[in-house]
Amino acid sequence: MTAAPEALARPGRLRAAQQFLADNPVIVLVGVLAVLFIVTDIVNRRDIGEPFITWNQLSTTLLVAAPLGMIAAGQTLVMLTGGIDLSVALTATAAAFATSWQGGNGEVQGVAAGLAVGLGIGLVNGIGVGIFRVNPLIMTLGTSSVTFGLLSIYAGKPFEKIVPEIVSTLGSDRFFDYLPANLLLWVAVAAILILGLRYTGYGRMLYAVGDNPVAARLAGVRLWQVRVVVYALCGVFSALGGLLLVGFTANPDLGLATPYLLQSVAAVVIGGTSIFGGWGGYSGTIVGVLILTVLGSLLTLLDAEEWQRQVIYGSIIIVLTAIYARVSGTD
Image (tube, rainbow, N blue to C red; front, top):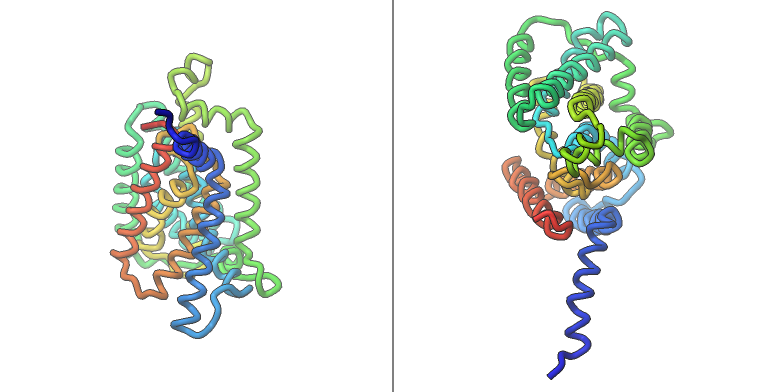
């Protein structure tokens, strides 16, 4: 007795749907983002009596999302190689402090100090992972702990903290009422990353190292150089995120970027980048950042506590990692 044509076609449609999700995560995520906007708009109208989907609110969403977008940019590059950086939040915080401490000596010196701190921490991570072959989880966790300890010592000292005007402008101002200044920087970084990953030799090496490091090494790729550079870049992007944060808050503190550690990982995973490396890209991360930002607004409207947010973000990472691993065949 033969099976019905519909029964035979069902597994084929399921495999096709799985392949579509694996090949086009951004399309699916844009739909999720749209649904999330609509739900938040409904809740906002119910509780406050005003629509959430307005030009002003969209502008605010982009303004708030940009720092996370910067930090998640570096996390994306690292995860493409099969690594992870648990020091991104403390790197952003350290860069914010360095910029504020040096802000009184001039805008250029303040910005340069913040970026130098980010580059330095990133290089330490890269040397540990790439040259000494320390596990990325252990290396970046250790770097994060050391950075926090040093910041705890110096944060309480009577340094004059002055946020440079250019950092304040970039982190909080809007042009033409609705265009966030930090969006200009985010768009520039996004364009460089998306095009760089797609069309440059270094971008292709990141995918090769993440997909099969042994094959990449046999093909002549110097793995340690790729890893040193990628962690250094992650440090710089984290520092940029820290500059945007301190420009927005105008007050550096030890917990400035703490919520962004888990969110940076969640944004990358939501965007379809595999934690095993070799698959994904920054375009998906951008949508993941926007999803988390709108989700944060929804949770605020629902009066969710911080522990509830962390549970939700952690659950998103676990569930989506399992889904992407299954549809991509890495399990």
